[in-house]
Amino acid sequence: MTFGARAVIRLGALKHNLKVIRERAPGTRVMAVIKANAYGHGMLEVAKTLADADSLAVARISEARVLREADIDSPIVILEGVFTGEELDMAIDAGFEIVVHCIEQFELLEQLESGRLTVWLKVDTGMNRLGFRVSDAEALIDRARECRAIGKLRLMSHLANANDRQDDKTADQLSLFQSIADGFDGDVSIANSPGLFGWPDSIPKPSGDIWIRPGISLYGISPFDETSGADLGLRPVMQLESRLISVKTINAGDPVGYGGTWEAEQDSIIGVVAAGYGDGYSRFLPSGTPVLVNNRRVPLAGGVSMDMIAVDLGPGASDKVGDPVLLWGDGLPVEEIARYAGTIPYQLVCGVLNREPSMVVD
Ligand SMILES: *Cc1c(COP(=O)(O)O)cnc(C)c1O
Image (cartoon, rainbow, N blue to C red):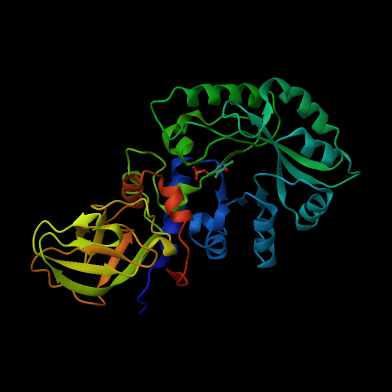
């Protein structure tokens, strides 16, 4: 038993979510996105648990190398690609698949005499972040066919607004991508979690395979503002847990915490929980944010400090030091907590600092 905030990672929920995702997009291949330490869930354990995903995706080569060094032998895609000859050699040696999104990366490949690399050519269908212009795609595909370093050539793009199901931009991006995919002989990929759950019939139909790229949904979290993961049949993988380390009575009018930003409206009992921004519990969470103490919702009272928060347990509460606290997880969706912090659940789970080592369970 630890008296500090700790992420409990439920691998059974992760497997369940992969199954739900596969059922959502039958016939597609799954590139499981595990960048940023698997969205804070622990990259290696998550990679091992997702061994039957068709591939794994990370942002950077440093992440891909950690996976290979741990003997993860799944295909690994580097979403931001490589930037130097040295990184390119490393990618070839390790058999990484690389995204090529800019001309500098393309020219680096063209300097090689051989390579047999699997390359994902990224086109920008409207996000205006990474990728080549749609109008250049055809010429680049022809040029890539001549490039001796490239074994398999594949096409990808990324959706900018799919988290909002009312936004027309996604349909525009999908049809633009479809127009390039139509004439392309190879695998293609555009759908992230919101694309997959929001536009299931709009995944392009090429002559090769279609790959989906779920990230947040694997972890049981909804990509949409208005729905929770549970609404989509997903189970939260992370439980951020802690314990009460102090219980004391206060009088009406007493301020709590730094700056006294919260004052008791009545005589009450304050519980102090060993969780703070030093654990990744956001300091942007205001008084009133729900916390589960002994499975009961109680409000955060006062500001979040580095190691602690205070909650108003209410008059007559019988909670004791050592009792369990849930900051988010089953029964308290991180989607809901993110709304209180004015952020997205992606940021909260990525921000868990694992000051106490996370605990992995089935
Ligand atoms: C992070 C990422 C994803 C996963 O997105 P989710 O919204 O978490 O499903 C997919 N594709 C690319 C290119 C990404 O960077």
